[in-house]
Length: 312
Image (tube, rainbow, N blue to C red; front, side, top):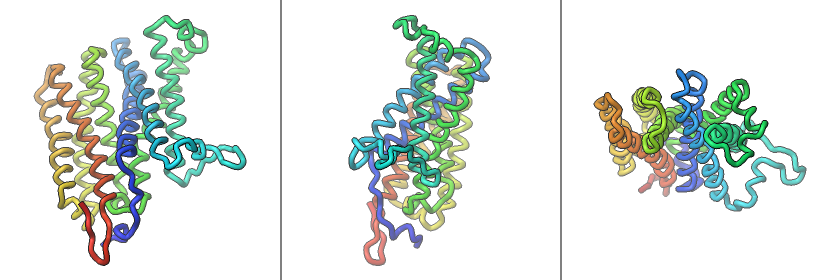
């Protein structure tokens, strides 16, 4: 039996699950919007780029709120970034939680700047949107810097949550080195799905851009399935934890509904019909959410009594 079975659970629950899920959508949506901004063929991509930046900014605000209210004393959130007695910034690069908090702050900054510049493209009012500082953000040089740095911190947010769990000495989380990669790949698929879903609802984005996102999502889903299989194999005997209803949720909800069915829908949707896009993207988002539910709660509910392991 792995020694991780003899540790106390941090009892992370729904606030953290939602934080993991919303944060990964925000980070991945920014990254994909930046790819279209930097390498897209033309102005037809701009509505989708702006939409990605809006999703990222709203997502990072929600993520910060969820992370804060999960703390035992939410009003002392600033203690995570500022030393209490000296008032100096507190950054511990060897602590994933510290890296994640600072990453969230910097990602919030760049997503705000990107969203502000995007909003100024669409609206002339209030006049602040057309002020010289905001117009500078729309220039090629500053916009590239914002896109690149924001993408770096967005990918950090998308992947660090798996690393955070991996360094927490609990069953499943610490029994494989692939959890960070799994969360990163899953985040890429859910971010693409969120962009496709909102763009379809708002009828935003050129068909070629939506087609590229669909192609990207399809390929990342295949990669996610492969990483998930390798992750389960790497768990060894610990994988028997999933011989329970958590395993059923993993197989039916994550693999079936969240990966295989969307792949079949996207394969058959050659003309990118909105109805199929919405259905497929919604299932991918459901699968990404259930993956985090299964990984967190299945480990949380494992405890050892005497020499026996009990769970849900």
